[in-house]
Image (cartoon, rainbow, N blue to C red; front, side, top):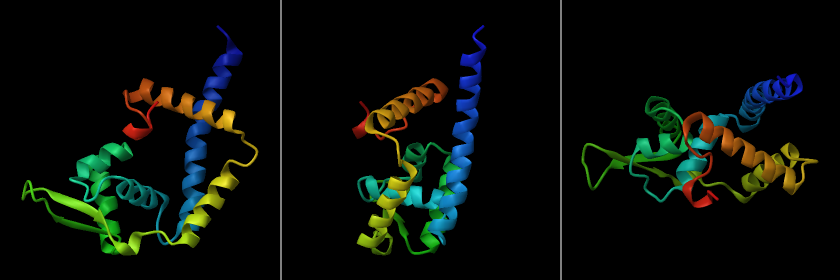
Length: 154
């Protein structure tokens, strides 16, 4: 058994979890009053065709449960960033749409780019591509699902 490979795999496993926790802590403080998870939910909803037909569509895109997604979306609705409306196809269902208040200003978009520049400082394009490929493979191994939206899958 190759113990150096085992150590690398264990370190990567722990590293992914630690980095996710650190990103959440850091960006929760920077994005306040939104949380990183709320910001991600808004970004996902904003990038789906409007209005989004159901919470299930968003939950699938976020890779989380319907219950957790509903809670996130309700918090965003309470802030006036999302709106729910009866579905024209099924009156029991509700569509979800981003409100004008949720649209990012040019300053916020610039801040987002600076945040990414800071996070990826010193990492070249090839390293980013390799990292994305490894994370994609790990996701597919874990649950059979891509990390990427269908339009971006390669």
